[in-house]
Image 1 (cartoon, rainbow, N blue to C red):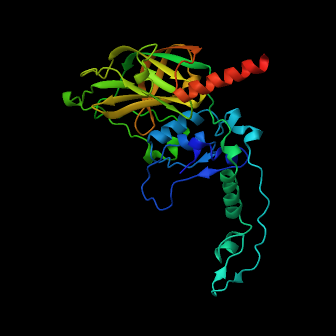
Image 2: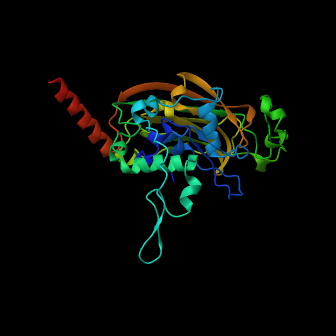
Image 3: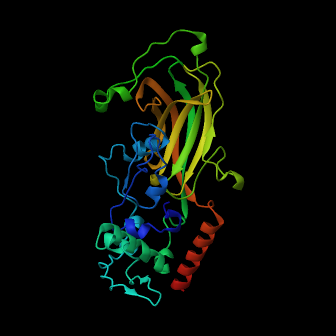
Length: 340
């Protein structure tokens, strides 16, 4: 289990490359959420890309247009967080028999297992992780992200949905280069049947996924304390209209770390995901925007889009947990005392 909540991996990932991957004994192709690994500063998180589930969708949003590399926040790369490389483990003294005839292991390890890891990468990693537990000062450093004085607000007005495929229709836009290489993972065109039973009744869901920091979705500009932990809200259902339904509903997306928060917009029909798109919250531009939607396989749907109006602002951070607010007050008091 990652020790990101206690900051246990941050010194290690600030100075060394770390890769996480699913257990080799797993035979299914599902994915675990990469948010905890990213929050711990892990550079490489292995995912089963043949399964286009929510973790893969978040991965696509974070790395889209980046060429494969995204710079970690400066606090996760700070030199004062880096773990000082430990010297190679010393060779253990020979074991000596005790009075009862048993073997007393040396100080370097336990019995014959000691030699197998001695000098290896496994031994160095174990030594470095052990140093994290022996040095409380490392774990006592402020975790990422620290409490922010301002919060980013994205006002998302969902206006209308256009040309959602019917329940038996498939309309992929096969223009991306990878479709020619993995065609079996993409959709195949299928015309609508014209049956009245195939008409969809969609609704739109707005979701936020944060690598770190306060984040919430609300209908009101100032959400109540009990609503500050909500990260998913939905519109009303447009009964029997998947062609051009109008919603005209406004959502307020709040995030203390907008460039580390991913927006996921989902179109559902009877509780089933039929279209979606993801984007980094801090990358959204203001004004009227058409969000080109994707099918559940990740392929863009031809001529299917969601019309939005986006406005962005910042405001004082009056949200978050009691611990975050208390930490912010203490830091401000320390700053005032230093200046006085």
